[in-house]
Length: 86
Image (cartoon, rainbow, N blue to C red; front, top):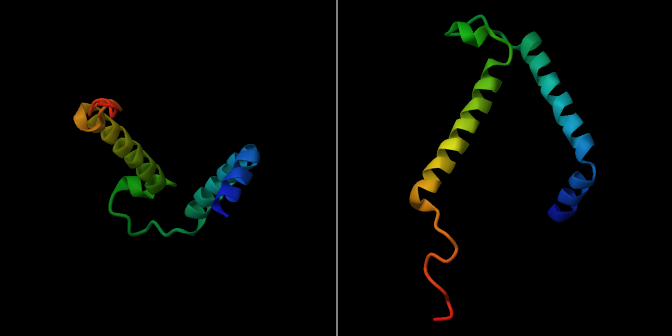
């Protein structure tokens, strides 16, 4: 079931990308029209889509810090433990 879904999405990748952009645009428009920003705590919270951008940038930071940390020594090469033929 899941494999069929992934294959379907791969075959229709351009349509999936367009659908994601349309969904993003609708969410930003919904944020601009329907979300009450009267009780925001900071000036940035009044910006349309602030929390979406904040969340996206936070995810990027987590990904890059994790990759950097992993390359410091957590990740080892495939032959780290030596050959299994010995």
